Length: 187
Ligand SMILES: Cc1cc2nc3c(=O)[nH]c(=O)nc-3n(C[C@H](O)[C@H](O)[C@H](O)COP(=O)(O)O)c2cc1C
Image (tube, rainbow, N blue to C red; front, side, top):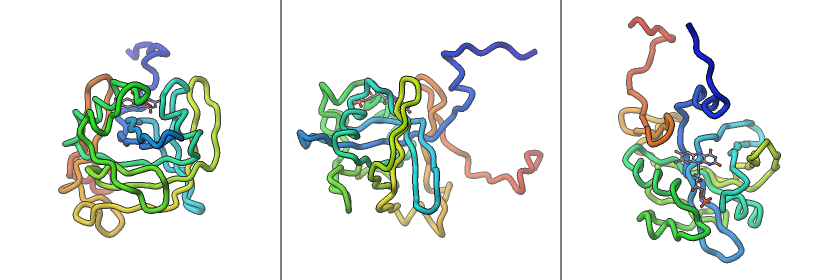
């Protein structure tokens, strides 16, 4: 028996999803942080990635204002801070300060990175697509870098990098370091 899933819960069938922290900056120069579970790679050449951001998010306004954003990859140890960043809006809260995360200048943009994260993708806005109540922001990656202790030979070392995944609500998880051999789940 398979039960009907309501529109409200449909997206959770596509979770858990990796959570990223999107940083942005507006004309005021105050940086902001927002957790995003709806992100995806899109193209190798040029390197394009996408994030889906609700119209009402303060980050939505800032990304349009500046034409750029940074995708920061948090580890599981930042789960509580990630949740906190998702609970309040940058419209009324200086989240870097309040949550206790460090803004560090990025290499190519005005938008800062979150220093405590494992990796960073600096993006210039390439295209925006209205999708229902969100805008899908496509970013062209102009610079990307990762902690060499956890990102080796072009992949995350899952013994070292405990990447954060959002299940739903306040529920998070991370990956096991056990790789399936050729997808053999019985091993
Ligand atoms: C784990 C997690 C994932 C989220 N994913 C998204 C997302 O993909 N898109 C979105 O628009 N909001 C998402 N949110 C909600 C925003 O992060 C939240 O509304 C945030 O407070 C917006 O901040 P801002 O108003 O400062 O931009 C998520 C929240 C959490 C906690």
